[in-house]
Image (cartoon, rainbow, N blue to C red; front, side, top):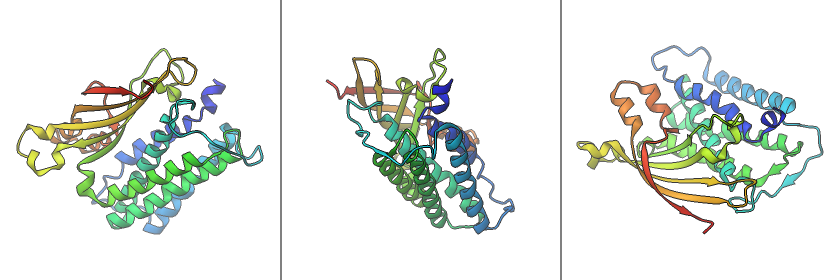
Length: 275
């Protein structure tokens, strides 16, 4: 249980639970916002920083050690998770940026303004998390810092360019293993992927190609303890499940599926980088 609470991957999943609500909640156009634009930004950032600080002190040993930094090796074979945790930082920052941007836009900012403030807020919160890590046993990771920055910037770019966002999704897939109690470190069953959606292109609007998409993904096997390790890149062809829910007049679920990949909805070809 102690390992579960102090798992570094829990940083990501603790907030993904909150993000699910953020992604689904902002569809409030036509409703009167409860706070002014400035107060919404202030409150959301203060709430995020408070949550990070509180959780870090209670569970991540924040401010108990002198500041340290660590070289975590990016995606190398000798790393703890084969770099999958780095994609986790990217994904979390990207998703948080978009969630906050949607909230800010609903409050009255333009889409571009909301995207900018959302990405800055996301980067600020994840930077504070890394600063907290530096005073704990985890240490400051410049790799994590860089991926947080790239995720926040990508969130800004895609949110402020909806025409491109209609064509591209960044998603997390998780196939649960119910024999494992710590799903947050179950990297054996996680994948991160980029999806190119045909329905964002004019040629596919009037035929069945609009229900198809191409995938480029990454996942690992055998980390961190097994002797045989795999770092896999794959390409695939999948069904655009988000489009199906959109056609069924379920916009919130459709939006959530821009960030979540449902298992068993695609076929793929793998390349093991360790061979």
